[in-house]
Image (tube, rainbow, N blue to C red):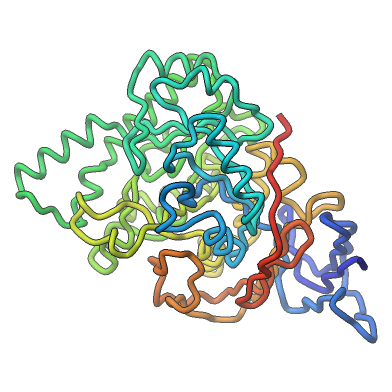
Length: 448
């Protein structure tokens, strides 16, 4: 097979933007050359004229819920990985709240085998912690998983870890990155009882951020940080949603020196509680979308280094499951296809830069999780690449959504950047609206 050349793209990589060409050979990047290169007189399939396009490293999403096994009416590894590559996400880390839960080595191995058979993107899976599986956690090979997921507040899947002695032992004895969903369950229950007593049995979506409140998020995050500092555990706080939580984080250290890291998600960086009136349950997530001040603080937290990466918390539900009030409608929604276009849109608005977006969605996830040879456009690295049309407006509609659930909080929104082509391990997997069904991703490996 001849090497493939992507010629004369604007390469956005490692804080720079320049015109150049990239040669792909097998699964890897063979060469990166800066400067304009004349095209061959008779270019074929092995030469892609990318003039006017942007070439980025594929995005790495550290928090998705692809719903397999057991919840496949909402989505599965095949359908949601196709949505991922259609959105320029070439690697994902799936969460353990499936049926059965990924809390045994047997369940973990089943996911790896399933993904090897059907995933269009590179894949990995968090192991799940419970109140009674510490012995199983200690058997996990840390070179195969990004870390251990703990739900410190109940969410989809009922995996709440609330035994304080168990938490202390996990933080003290487990040699894995510990990623937490941090919401204080006692505060959520208290808030729920208060608003039901005050306002009656049916609470509309505007009560969601009042029940799953700033206080609930901060109290849980603060406890997790305190426990990590006391035990020396490596802590990663998922989907920050409040300005107050930023005070728990240190922006003054290089990522490699941080004991405690954090993630922001697309919905918390884009929407605010003012959008509930327009979008309703479409933007119901746990933790809740909160105020404009919180959203703006999260954006600033990325800029100043207190927040380290951007992810999606992609969590599809059937549209019928999103109906009801704030207590009965399902929490979560599909985002993996639209995350990179949304972040590039914010860059076009001057909120971030394109170099920032690449850093937070590709470089830093690779660095934070010690992923082997991904996240950068470098010779010798796997060729996970995305070509973007920078001035090609398109509108999100049911007809162009790849996620099985068939809806998006961005329906009707027009983005100005379109994903043109996506490569996974050197293979073209997505091309202008079409998926190449035979392409399969690889299991992510970690240098730990």
